[in-house]
Amino acid sequence: MGWEKDDPTISDRLRIAQRGFYKNSYGPTKCRWKVLNWQKKQYAELQVQLRKFLDDDVPRIEKVLVNAGPPPFM
Image (cartoon, rainbow, N blue to C red; front, top):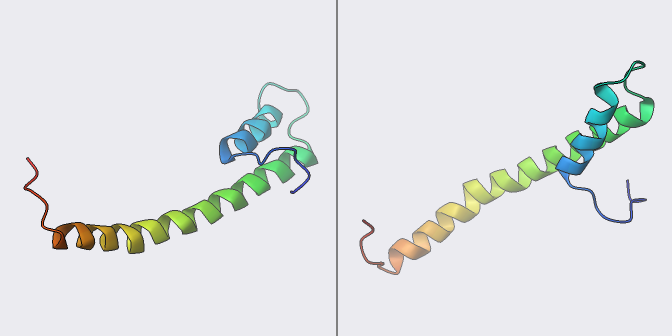
């Protein structure tokens, strides 16, 4: 990683890897496997960030909003 011009998204990497798994007669190459593994790593890192957001940030924001005394939500 780090050699790409733009930082590829998880979807970009998955799409690249998929091209090597489907509709070819020789199967995935080592490069395709490497891209898939990069995608898995990138996804795992995103899961950690998302879990922190859901477990820490959302409850904290909710508490701030409740303490501010918002009008009832219908």
